[in-house]
Image 1 (tube, helix red, strand yellow):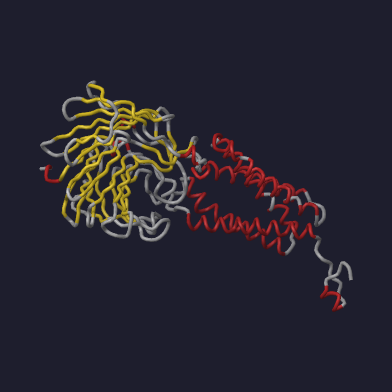
Image 2 (cartoon, rainbow, N blue to C red; image 1 turned 135 degrees about the vertical axis):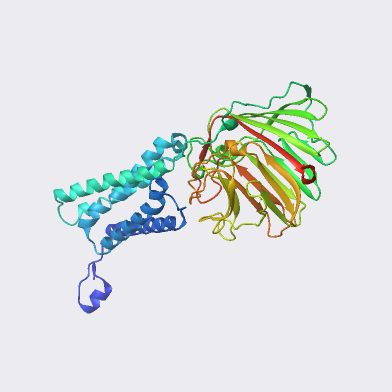
Length: 476
């Protein structure tokens, strides 16, 4: 019985099968709406919160996802009940939003989108063509329906463009040289030396000229410090790094240019960083105090947008149970743990706010907020930041950074939320064992904390990193 359903044939009721084109159209929109609804719900649940209504992330993270879920549910209900009159006004909003997002992304991130703009454009075209379906069935449309559909499409274009504009990095808030024109380390010219391997300053301290790293033994700790500014995950125009090819994303490694010796215990190392600028490192050893002073300078020829970067990177080994004490919060010790990534055991980190409040906080899960304050103090731009390393409660070594507070960006982080800025001092263990390697990761402006692949900017200029590493016994 051609053209009839089998069950209809047995009961005598004629049931016409749905045309294959109409069935595929319904299946397509079912998939589109379900995917968008799920993505909106997941983003609302995972996106960083705590933003004020005057911040664009309040609307993209807390308001817009709810609207997407509601819109998807309405369209699914009308699709199920074949309300073509309602679908005429609602379905065009989806391709319009994608078109608005694509055009705004091309305008905001022309370099990155030059490679991939065709993908979202094709998605918008496919949805736009399939949105014609309700207009071809269900009778003629009145002027009011056409006007409502056009107004909804225009609003959807603006919403899509708003999502793209919210991804633009905030204005760079770093302060090269602490706002001073101090420039590179001022060390008198000395005698050039051939490039060699590790250079010992004493039996327990050496510098690796190839990357400007310091390796020191302050019993029982073995401490490695990398004081040169380096970018691990960059974007050419500020687009989220997930859209950037890996070859473009990775920052350049320092290339040794020359070594100059100034006096008996002082050296100056010079570097080139291809496509980024230059760097130098002055190193001097004080035998009486058994301490090493470093004066690093990294010059950016142009602004650099990055997701992950390191102003100073420290690794500590040889401890039994390491804890840190920060100079703005004297007397408070903070043990290191291995945080869960992206969820699990909460991470600990510190930062300085725009009002110069220095906080040590604990995340809710992994590195995600809200964040609970564990200690607080004040860190003025002129104040040095000293981190004391304790092993089993006993102070062993001190690391003092003279220029962190003066150069740190205090702009709100787009990935952390909850009032956390883009500067951070993250500290963690590499394993669950208390004696596993510890890392202290310091950034002036980055988005390592929180959710997302957003970028923030470093201004062009010379960034100083004057630091001193010394045993505690040498400090009065």
